Length: 113
Length: 115
Image 1 (cartoon, helix red, strand yellow):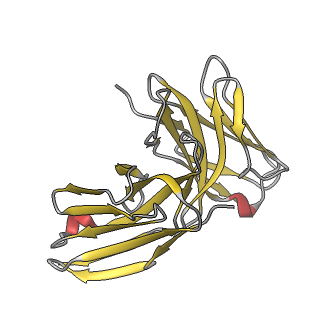
Image 2: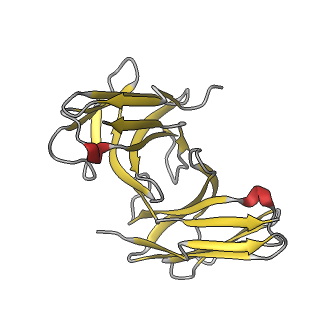
């Protein structure tokens, strides 16, 4: 079955440092989505990437989808304490979109002020 | 527009009892997904339903677990004869009917504790 791996599992940074999390799928994806979960909260949708090589930005967050549509990354520039949480990638596989999402294990980010 | 609703938010059951978790999707959404999350772990897909249909239950344990999404009313995840290993957060998510890639909107979750 489809597997989605995410690294690192944990990342501790000082406020102002950059942060990157990487996501790799065992199979080609139709699209990839990113979610953020604050401690004690629920996952919140951040963004969706569909096209090969796609890059999207949301303020200090930059999302990339690999050319082969098997990997993705999320980069945060100049982290802030409000960025604390766990970031999950989730891949939708195969030719048919609308099927189940497979979530990575997440990267837990802590930011020291 | 109310978001995805889940109740109860916290549920305590003794071993052997039944747990019934409810999920009302966002207005206009007809696709519901259930996930389980253990502490410090990721989200594990359980089941994907549309109204009156189970589309994909490949992540659901074969025994004791069942899910439904009736024509009227919320989606229900039922766990019979709960065991301590069932203790987890159970999240429901919904997505709209429109075709193409669809983001999922998550509810606040139900934290199940089995004593």
